[in-house]
Length: 203
Image (cartoon, rainbow, N blue to C red; front, side):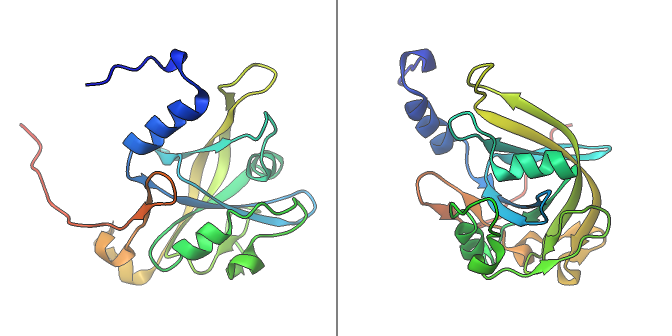
């Protein structure tokens, strides 16, 4: 087994090991709104649950040369963002939303996505998503890199409203096979849900 010290190799080499081993990763398609009223949409696979009481989720938004991306800036200025679960029906649109557009141009039209108003936050949602979560920004932490140029902004959002497609809900639970979530692998690769199996927790 290879033993690798991350301090002895480049950031890019460490990145390859992380994204190649921490998989599959769920993909958050995040919408935010700028102070000028422009809706931004972008996918992020550094995304997960933090806790359920209150419902908190995390999205890590990598910076470019130490500069925050539109998602981070908008989330901080508006105090909100909306997370959509990427599935088989919208994964190509989510990928299209990753295009590097200017801050004054929305990704939604180019990705073929439809804006819908949120119930509790300023940031709008996307109609095509089967699951979306309206979030208020609980915390934003600049992390990594250097003090002058952090590597990322870790956004912690408190879910204040869930939107779940009716066909997914059964006794308060979501049917994963009907959701058909898509996850991120390394490079340009994605994965579907695949085989589901159960294991009983030990007593």
